[in-house]
Image (tube, rainbow, N blue to C red; front, side, top):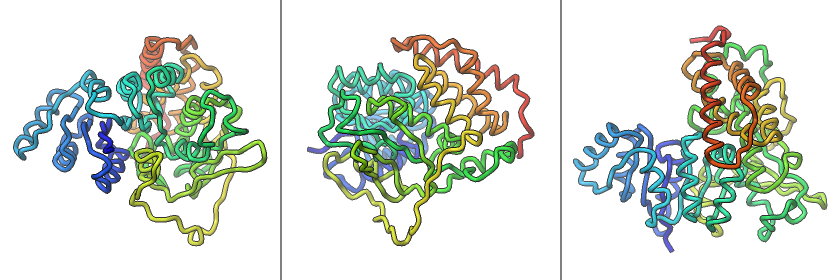
Length: 400
């Protein structure tokens, strides 16, 4: 049966990769809805090619621009806008699969709506679990939704777990730990003292992956790996002590699962997001992703090292937030979003990102995250604290 997709965040890098895979298999996949924020021109191009029933954008002005362009080309896609419209296409009966690829907290409401509607969810938005882990997983369980990880690391772990693992068990089929690999980003070998003058252009230049600006900065600080530890904690129902991070510069082994008998299973592949996307789209089948087969003889060497918390303090902060529980992870995510935005706008230096995050975690009381309102309140408060700290911060000289 052909799967009908709603793609939340279609104009980002995950959206591009998803649509590339979809285009290779028109017999298997069709597109019900595409959503973007303000990248109307790219959304128009996508709509003309994939002919969705609905397109959603962030505001009325962008919606009018997109609607006019599509009408001129004879495209009948309905154009809507705003957060409510985003939630509506995520839970619409016309789609069975939702690809959650909106970056940051902005994707929480629509992804949660998909879970509550019992959809098959391909999760690329790690922030939904970071912010509202138990709430989100309860919504998946209580509504019969199917959750498939798209992040390359979590998808790798998913592929290495026992196929019949008890999802409620603390130890899935003898699993002793999972190992999330990290490339180390562009500054893996740089001394911390040399990172003060890092520019946004340097930070977004990832050595292995092609990603958006925000997630590229997260990879440079390696807070993205900390967010992935939190995500893995909820996805696989494992405590933090059974989740390890290992630097692997080649980005060939995407993650590993270590078992009680001493076996370690790893998922390998070229660093291309189309591989985990194709796996999740077709699961339990496998289809051509368009990614070249891995040539281990050409790669020749795979190396590993422990993360340096002095160089990457944000990773340590994320792990601390997970261990603290409550609203700490939501606060961490919000503070990081504000700090990264300030860095990309050249208002603070690169090393100040971690300083802002740490100050917010220390300033905001850690309370319960039992309800979604608790999470949203923490997110809002953390953003206010972070914005104030950015304003107060005397940044190191920033290169232009």
